[in-house]
Length: 428
Ligand SMILES: [Zn+2]
Image (cartoon, rainbow, N blue to C red):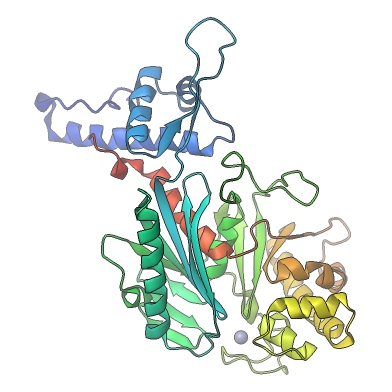
């Protein structure tokens, strides 16, 4: 069947119920196709462009685009001057500050939330630092719930609609059951976190692993409030937008260390969604005990607490203290960075030998620490990666460094809106 045929979804009673249902599904399918084409474009496309890329007729595309505009997912830009005679093309772009996604996160030394709009712009954010080692889940998630309600009220008062929320947690998450299995550094295990947020039922919340969401955030950088055209990746240090590789390992350095394996722009989650636990890769079985119960895990050498402890800096000090000590050449700080870099390099070498990945993005506190870790990392990787004589591993700072899991969470909510926009349109 021609995909176009049923896309306007005119129901003909004589053709029976199954045909109507099929037409409904086809309209949804075509609407998603058009929506995805608009959101995937790096420069705004016209209705004619969309017809060209989707294979739908111009008339069908027009009807569907109008529905996306009415649903406030897409907006029209001023018409471009036509090169030839005829009607000028109207470029289409994601709508600003209309439908938004909420990313929430609990980590060991902060909790917070970020609201992103469909253009990738941060429209509201609140982050509260604090020591959450061995904390009470009900108390912490109750506070996060209150923070989330403040953010929702703030954006709703500006006529934005929150499509849903993702809660990022630093541990093993059973997303389907909504259960946190274990978050060793928080001291949390085996419960359902979402009900403890106490959010209204109209706001669907799902949970996910912190590093996985932060890894997804790297695929498209968010646009800082009030700056420039939407959907342009943040520029690199040389002022040029760095290309985001489609496959990479993202490593999130916090008190704990997590990672996301991204292959062809999709997360490799593993069988149960528990892949990427690089923080509990063994560096030395005779090493210090880890909060997971094992000994000598990577976190015990290259996690934030481990590095501060080795550098003789109080654990509640901001990581900038460690950076300052490194800049000043303080011997204990240099030693701490060197042994952290060595441990991380060994763990990464194992990963690279196993999964043949060329790019590693270093996120969390590693983004700023990378210049101080690079030498030790490179030494270990060159020594231990079998393929190293033929390829150089591309180690680079994460594109989205600060609060990447919240941004990734909000983006995941919006990705679902774009992939299934019919829930937001009124016609059927
Ligand atoms: Zn461990």
